Length: 158
Image 1 (cartoon, helix red, strand yellow):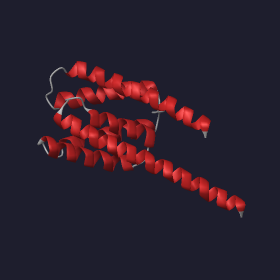
Image 2 (image 1 turned 90 degrees about the vertical axis):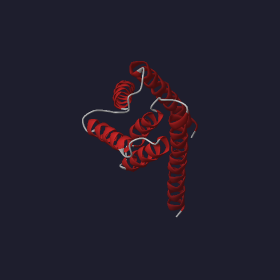
Image 3 (image 1 turned 30 degrees about the horizontal axis):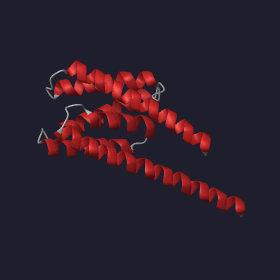
Image 4 (image 1 turned 180 degrees about the horizontal axis):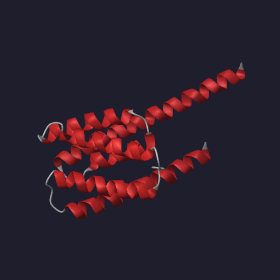
């Protein structure tokens, strides 16, 4: 009986962690949409979707990518569906690559963030594509390293 209660308690703690994780990512995704549509031309939404796909690895990322792209297109008054289509194809390529190789590595993050940013910025006719792609790759790389270190500390304290 005590074992059952402790298992249910651990299951609830795991669900709470997942819910907190998704809330944090949805808030950061919304902030990225606002920043990308008003202040910067960096593909912040694409980078957050990459990060979410690597960390989460569920099919829910497709829905998040589609609706984030749709909201981004509506707010920026761009071609409706362009960003959604690009983000969904990008997530599909990540998951396709996942079947053969490990995607939660630093090399994968660097290559995919640079390539995705470069292609997205090139297709949206933004200036200084190479420089912004390099900056995007560095930004995601540092975020990924910080996430890994923070996650490791959480595991040691738990």
